[in-house]
Structures are given as structure tokens and as C-alpha cells.
Length: 126
Image 1 (cartoon, rainbow, N blue to C red):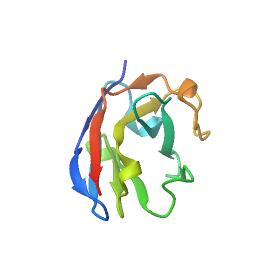
Image 2 (cartoon, rainbow, N blue to C red):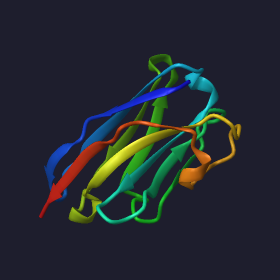
Image 3 (cartoon, helix red, strand yellow):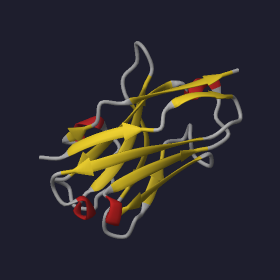
């Protein structure tokens, strides 16, 4: 069983930056992919980014490409999402998730992730 806890959310002005953290426990962190998703009220969770465990390959959603960077520190069992040039439309609850079943295949849909954190709120003011 994998437990995930996000932190680092908050209120920031447009153009600012935040770094989210996802601390993992249980399982073997270095052996599974970690993804970030976000959800705004009334919408389904949107894929943001994923990083593989094997070679740290990354993949991003179109809306964040070039502004967000996903990374991981296996020694700390923690994944990160560095968010730069934030826009009001980035306002959402951000979730990290673990894909423990599909090896290092990149997963971009919520159904491919088995474990989820509780989320952290990011609010970007204009």
C-alpha cells in the first residue's frame, strides 16, 4: 500500500512560482511512476505531468508544457512539481498519484494510477 501526501500549495500572484511536493511511504518509491493531476470545480481531473522510475523520462500536458517541471528524489521518496509563470487558469487542487502496475510505461489517465494523495490547493490571483 502506497500513501502519498502533497504539500506546497498556496496563494500566488499571476506570473509567480510554487513548488509542490509529494511525499510517499509504503511500497518501493524508486520502482513506480509518479504523476501529477489537477482538478477545478465541476471538471474531471486533468493530467499535468508524469515522471518514470526507470530513466526519469517526463511528459507534460499541453497546458503546462514549458512552465512546469516534474522531478523526483528517490532517496527522499519525494516527487516535486515546480510551477513557474503561473496563470489564473492554473488554479486547482493538485494531486499526485502513483502508477505501480505498469512498469515504466507513461500513463496520462486517472484510471492508470492506483494510489492518490489528498490534494493541495493552488490559487493564482490575477
